[in-house]
Amino acid sequence: MFRKILYPTDFSPSAKGALEYIKKLKDAGTEEVILLHVYDERNIEIHWEVESELHPDESIERAKHDVVKKMLEKSYAKLKELEDEIAHLNFKTELIVEEGIPYQKIIEVAKQNDVSLIVMGSHGERGIVEKLFGSTTGRVIAHGDTTVLVAKPRNGNNH
Ligand code: ATP
Ligand code: MN
Image (cartoon, rainbow, N blue to C red; front, side):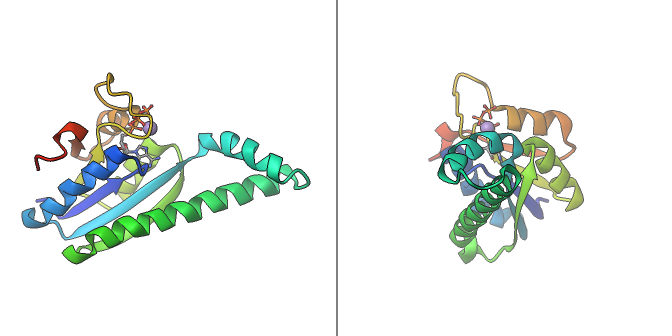
């Protein structure tokens, strides 16, 4: 039923909680897991300001390119750690790091890979718990065509 799962993560504890559900879904027939991180292109301005102080001589474009490259590499390494964590379950896995607006890329990757289920956290790195769920999750549900499992952190011990 849930043969191919897309797991989008911003590496927050809430997203980590969602990974626990994927481990359980092995028994529900899941064979394939795509782990996806989207480097939010809107963050470049923040990361760039910090980095530009460290490298004042570099041209702006060159320095921006370096910052993005570094962020993408770091993200790939973090995805690998998560992949290691589910390795014993023998899913077929794929790691994807993309640059863009997170909810748009999540919907795009789900469509392109014909996934049967998206498993994600109700909240993310901003984690304002008063909100029902974060804006990435809300937009994936609203604008995408794929069924979504939204993991609530407070149910962390219940699955
Ligand atoms: P907001 O971003 O709206 O201020 P938030 O950060 O608490 O609030 P979301 O961004 O909606 O909440 O995060 C919910 C879930 O969406 C995360 O647990 C994760 O599964 C997924 N997600 C969020 N950002 C990304 C990202 N950049 N790449 C991949 N998945 C993401
Ligand atoms: Mn967020």
